[in-house]
Image 1 (cartoon, rainbow, N blue to C red):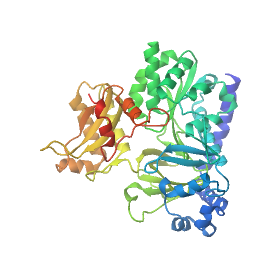
Image 2: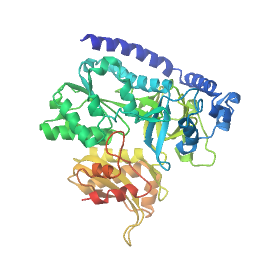
Image 3: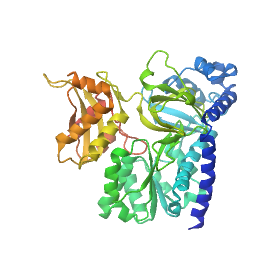
Image 4: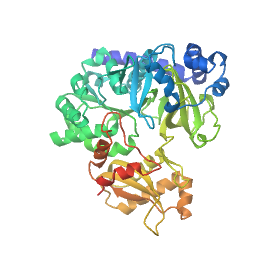
Amino acid sequence: MSLKSFAAKLFAKRIAKKTKAWSRNPVQVQDRLFQNLISRAKNTQFGLDHGFDRIKSHSDFTRQVPVRDYEELKDYVHRIIDGENDVLWPEKPVYFAKTSGTTSGAKYIPITRESIKNQVEASRNAILNYIHETGNADFVDGRMIFLQGSPELEDKGGIKLGRLSGISAHYVPNYLQKNRLPSWQTNCIEDWETKVDKIIEETENENMTVIAGIPSWVQMYFEKLNAKSGRKVGELFKNFQLFIYGGVNYEPYRAKFEELMGKKVDSIELFPASEGFFAYQDSQKEEGMLLLLDAGIFYEFIKADEFFDENPKRITIKDVEVGVDYAMIISTNAGLWAYNLGDTIRFVSAKPYRVVVSGRIKHFISAFGEHVIAKEVEQAIQTAISKSDAIVNEFTVAPQTSPPTGELPYHEWLIEFEKQPSDVPTFISHLEESMKGQNSYYLDLIAGNILQPLKISKVQAGGFQEYMKTIGKLGGQNKVQRLSNDRKVAEGLKPFLL
């Protein structure tokens, strides 16, 4: 055992003890954090506008601070850009994380000294908890790759601006700098395909032990490695032990990854966003990710099926139920207040509180009242893959509301197969039965002849990557939308159908 791996185990033990302490007192931890956030921000412009000095309880907060998304918060953000102090938090942000907006173009998410510290610690603690649980620390002596955005930062109102993954690159601890790839110069390459080619040059002959990134873009890296070397990733990197990912569900990619790697490796799921680091997988044995309740974020939850009601009920951690889908609302030490993140989560455990990401509150299919969410289509594709010889690279689902004359509407599954199922009708049947088993609304619509069973449209090899390129979202933190209530993505994929 090297000195570095021995030290990692000692540090991991300390962090695991600290994690267990706060996770045993979740309600008290959140209550203290809530009071601290309100107290710290009461003299900010937002705090003055919303009477923070009169907020003593969560019920006070819900009365005085409405749920907002970025569009409704952006006037405060623009005041920061224009040079005002103490707007959302009692200091200026040190960064803006730039993300894609919906109606307003780019979004500028404030990141403070405290919130970036929480982000960095959460990333570190995810790995340390893995070390503590498994006893495996040998990988710290090898090379680690993090597929991420450019670390080059711009200036916005005197505040540094960049993608979250690029900002995070500035906080890699010194003891990992020598292990980390790709080089700074390569990380700064903007064109994703050029960047991946350069990453392959820098990594193909190295002792890679940890690889991290969004699965779809890591898959692209693996495929190019295979094509260049003619070898499986596991043969090329004999000590590759750990895959770290976030952003999308790994399960639909797992079979393809294991085929590319030629072996199984442990994985750690993360739930980070520009707005905060919310959860990480703390166990290789238990389902879900540990919700981080002591990391500068106060959580509220609204049942997903009540979210669009006129006055939906906002609850705190003490009142959540296992198995229910919630829209997650956050208030943070970066100055986001009752902020609708847009993600839906489902609790799979309450001791401790573990969650899975079930979708996006705006990403669903309900063209006919079926209320289908991302978690359901991901589970269906996973089931169909497990019961067939198919390998799926990527997929998305959209409603077909205008079928040919005489046909009923249906859900169109646009799938890029690495290996097509030898029995396509049975594959479709497995998808259909899984959907009906998970979603009673969908079952009733099929049974009532409102919808016909789903149909598959096959996308050519590399079609999703080409589509993402056409909309300027190839690589980095971008990911394919799993489903939508319109046909925008489906129409964009039309040129790439077989």
